[in-house]
Length: 92
Image (cartoon, rainbow, N blue to C red; front, side, top):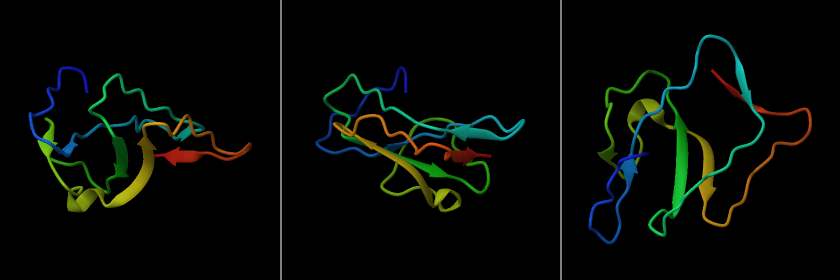
C-alpha cells in the first residue's frame, strides 16, 4: 500500500481493504506479488461477504468476521501463480 509506514516492531500484521470492480463479472488468470521490501514476508487476500467498515490500514492478526474466506496467497519466492488453461478465479 503506497505511503504505508511499517511500525518499528519485530512482527506486525496489517490489514487493509481493497474494493474490486463489481459492474460485471471479472476473472483472474494469474497474480503476482510485488514487494520491494525486506519487511514483507507474505500476503493473504480474503474475500468479504459485505463491505468492511475500515478505510485505512489497521493492525490485525486475523481478518474481520465478514472477510473469512481465504482467497489467494503470496509469499517471497512464491513466483507468479498461473491458473491452468481454461480455468480462473471469479471475482464478484
